[in-house]
Amino acid sequence: MDWEGVRDRYTVFADDAVLALNKPAGISVTGERHDTDLVELAQAAGTRLYPVHRIDKVTSGLVLLATDLAAHGQLTKQFNKQTARKRYLAIVSGAELPERGEIDLPLSVGRKNRVRIAAQREAIQRAGDRWFVDEADLLPAKNYPSRTRFVTVARHGDHALLAVEPITGRRHQIRVQLAWIGHPILGDPLFDRTATHPRTHLHSWRLTLDADWLTPPILALEATPGPDFWTPFGAGAGTELLHTAAQAVDGSRG
Image 1 (cartoon, rainbow, N blue to C red):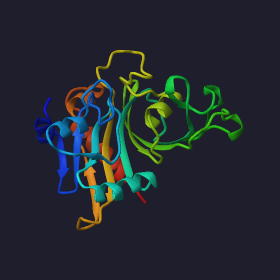
Image 2: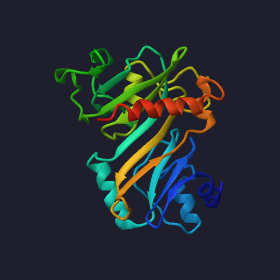
Image 3: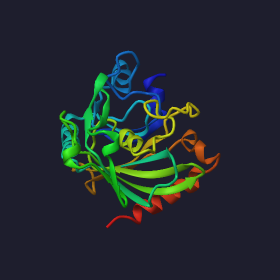
């Protein structure tokens, strides 16, 4: 794997300030001790990259990297203020989900630095399309408010395709919250014990931020999942499902 090949194959958008890649699953963005990551790969080829955000190694899809420090500061502030608009696609176990839902479950860090819900599993409540815990049931450890919204796009057997919007942006947020309400992402090495899926079916799909150097001053990005993402729904299902997801998400605005 070389940087020129990665850039040529996976670039979604590039200008003098930023580079957006449609990262395949299995490659880290930055900070891995033992694996080559995108930032290190680029640096070895003479290109300095500043990650605007991160997605997990097992997650595919959009990752935004700045090549200009001024743009990096402007964009990371939007992530810190939670004004960046993010959408993911996830294929989960269990099809008995509502058409729309909100998971309002604070996160904390448990043993071995693992992210978990900041309450016991039995304390999780569901009222209609919302999952939550009472404040009195929170564990004494420090917790981080975390909210995720989703739209159920399609169902196939015991699987469901979700369009997911993390309102907050905590580490492992989508993966942990879906698993703790009983709908782990297929192939997730942390939570899916079936071992029948060769990849984690979570994809960073859409990203929208303000970008004052552009006209109009909006950076709106979209990355199409590869064929391997759609395999739980059958070969050739991707085009139709992606269209359905776009309709579901675009129709929910307002």
